[in-house]
Amino acid sequence: MKKNLLISAILAATACAAYAQTAPEEQKAAPAIKVEKIVTAASVENREPVGETSTFDSTTTQVYTWTKITSEQVPAAIKHVYYHNDKLVREITLSVNSSPYRVWSVKNVTPGNWKVDVTDEAGTVLASATFTVGGPAPEAAK
Image 1 (cartoon, rainbow, N blue to C red):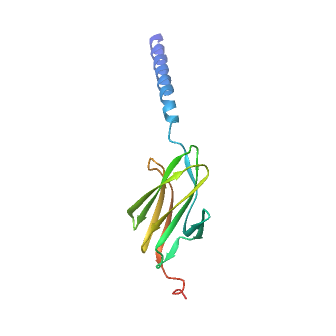
Image 2: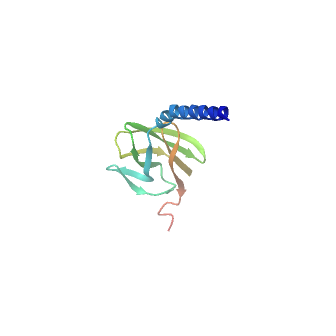
Image 3: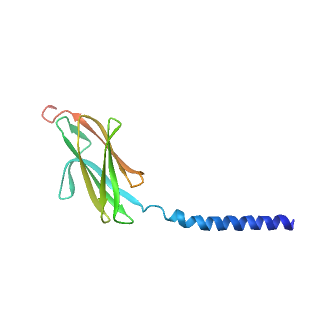
């Protein structure tokens, strides 16, 4: 009985020591980056999106993706990853120099369904936005 108790105590102590050694490594995870807001728009002026929408008419040639980011550690980087009809077409790396921070990218577009993923440096998707190009032009809708 004493032998089993001693073995159990040794195993428990070993498990605690192993946990204590791995816990700090887990705490060294990448700094948390959070997407506060993501929108697609016709343009960006004075660091703010203009003409926010998720449906663009067929005459649209460029779409802006605007993102407000907070980060526990700066500088940091994010990516805007663009997909057209489920096919990866472009990755744009953007610097985050303070927190909160507003960044945007612009993409030349063609008609179809689009998606933009915001990822951290490790490739983890933090947020997504979808938009469509190819709706009727405002004059043609009447």
